[in-house]
Image (cartoon, one colour):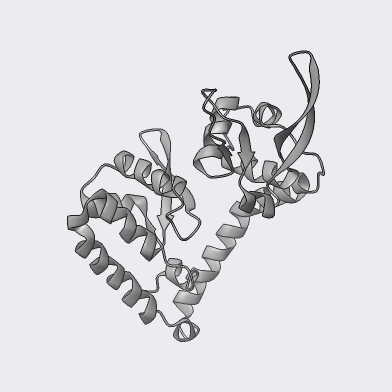
Length: 231
């Protein structure tokens, strides 16, 4: 039997936060905060891949980590399970090596299975791709509040996502409870968010201030992330 998930991702092998929770005997909800903490401290070497799963009518986020980052997570979470995690990685890597795409070409049943899988993915992703192309073509940028309004979610919900996923950060301020919001440079480089100058009135004086705005490309990505949130 061919594992299509491995065949289609030969160069990217990850382990999900759900599987790590199972290996360590922890609840998934207790694993994710540590992942976010490591991400916030910029200790992870790769950008986290996200997926979702449903349980009892609720949708939850799953994080997918590379080998190095998953070992770092378990060392922080439950060091005594590091050996078990390494053993599991060895199983995954051996399984990946045993998958021979060339041999699959001579297996009609496997070929049909792969073709059906690709057709299903195209059907599933095409509406999102069309929406992405349409929205990304827009040159308009939006502030966080306007972006949240168009996504039909609360500004606080969007702000939390942007902070947790390292789109934005707050500059530390000693004299204020919350510092000014700034964009991470790598998100600017990706074309998802940008800095712009805005005119503000402060204590009777007109000043220029730096603000962040979501680009058309960024809005397209967020519209997929929050699809169905307002329903």
